Structures are given as C-alpha cells and as structure tokens.
Image (cartoon, rainbow, N blue to C red):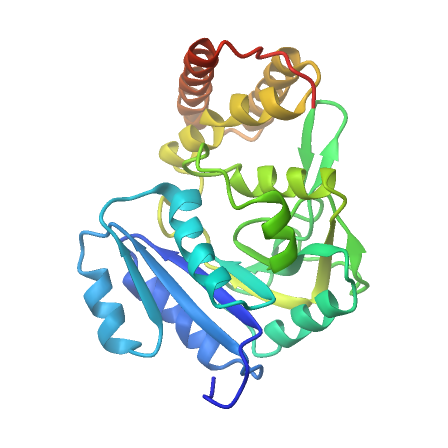
Amino acid sequence: MTAETPVRVAIVIVNWNRAHDTARCLRSLESSRFSGWSAIVVDNGSTDGSAQFLRERFPTVELVGNERNLGFAGGTNVGIERALAQAVPYILLLNNDAELLPDTLSVLLEAADARPRAGIVSPLILYGDGRRIWFAGAYRRRFPPGFSWPGYGSTRFPCLVPRRIDYATGCAMLLRREMLQEIGLLDGAYFMYWEDMDLCERARRAGWEIWLIPKAVVRHHVSSTLGEWSAEKWYHLARHIPTFYLRYYRWPRPAMLAYAGWVTVRELLRGNRRCIAPLWRGFRDGWRKEVRARARTNGDGNRTG
C-alpha cells in the first residue's frame, strides 16, 4: 500500500493469542498485487504479548486493543466500525489463520464492482496446503433442515464461473459498505460461529446478493485458535444453533432438533464419537440461554422468519 493509492478496501483481522498466525496473514497482504487496502487488526484481549509483537513488526497497520475477549462477532465489529469511519466502499473480514494469494483482492473487488447488488462476495477457500477445498459456497437445505457445503474436503475444484450462493463464511468475506449501513453489523449475540450465517440471512432477506468468485483464492490454515474440530469448537458450534433457528425458522424446535440429530448421526457414522458430548452440551446451554432471554423479554420463541 502506498500513500498515493486511494484505499478501496479495509481488511479486518481479529487476533487472540495467535500473533504468529496474524503475522503470516499480514505478510500475505503485503504480497498483494492490489495496493488500495488498509488493515485493521483487533487484538481481542490477548494475554501472550500479541499486541506488542504485532505493533513492532507491522507499524503501519492499525492495531486496536480490546481489554477482554469480545468473541469473534464483538471483536470484528470493533474493526468494522473503524473501517466504516474510513469511508471505504468495501470491508474484507479475514481470519487471522488465512492467507490471500497475490491476485485475490483485485479479483474480489472487480467482481463486486460489476454486481451492484452483491452485498457479500466470497472467494474460494482452500486448506493451507492448497490441495483441498475448505469452502466453495453454502446453501440452505430443506431436509434435514440445515445447510450444505458442496465440495468440502474435495480435491476436485469447481468451475471458475461466479455463482450466487446462500451463505458465505466469516473466514473470508467481502462486505459492501451500503449493505452494512442498511442491515447492521455482526450480531454480538453469537460469541463464536453462526454470526456469518446470521449476517448472510439478513442480507438476503433485505434483497442483497451473495456471490462466490472461484478465481479469487484464500488459503485457510484451519482452526489455529481452537484446533480443527476440537471439543471446544463443537461446543461453540452447537451453542448458537437455537439462536439462529429460533430467529429464522417457522417451526424452530423440530427444525433444530432434526439438524442436531442429523449432525450426531453423521459424526457417529464417521467414527467421531468424541464430538457428541460437547455438541449436545452446547446445544443444551444454548437452548437454556435463549429460554432465559425470551422469558426476560416476554418473547415468543416460535416467531416466524
């Protein structure tokens, strides 16, 4: 990035006790062939000296320190608010364990510029080795009520034609400023996971489009924070199932139970028995949290979407 180049995209990265991952991510930005970017790193209450490490090695990057861990949604919103104050047309949310390829930013922005109703634009996301797909779009599935991620784990890459999708992932998603101003930021009710699905749901209901641009590629060194499919990750994934389903499904109780049951059967067939206890513990805790919240507000947990 040079002082003469107007900034068109602000990149928001949340760090929590993973300074070396964040440094790798920032180095990939420095290798970008697109120069009109700025980076905002939100240190989410790290206790390992991350803030000082990053400040010394990347003095031109804006570093914002939170006194405590606000979760992914809360930490990201701090960065989004800073980015909106810069009046940039686009904001890219990027996991700190992800890397951009040199042409990724220019391809994403070109695609967004060509589609005025594209509120969210996603790259193709590969695992860190670049050989397998981690994300190639997500879609709502009728039964069991939930979501499909076609291509996940596959070595067969999709065609490179851009296409509409139902959901993008907060690992790497380009957001249009006007969309955020209309529908709001990430919902802090989701401490970790589901906040990106919620944002996409609100965007689509407001008439915005979500696109996958396969020529734009990001590599994801998966789950540096919690470990891929750790017990803690399963817990947090399940904890906000009730929050999402109660908001957006006409019959949320049977839908969420069907989804949680389907995930249980799927993982048992895969031999992943260790995930079952944290999954259902998270689901239970999330349900209790929603019941208490609705009792306080006299809400109707069966409201339609």
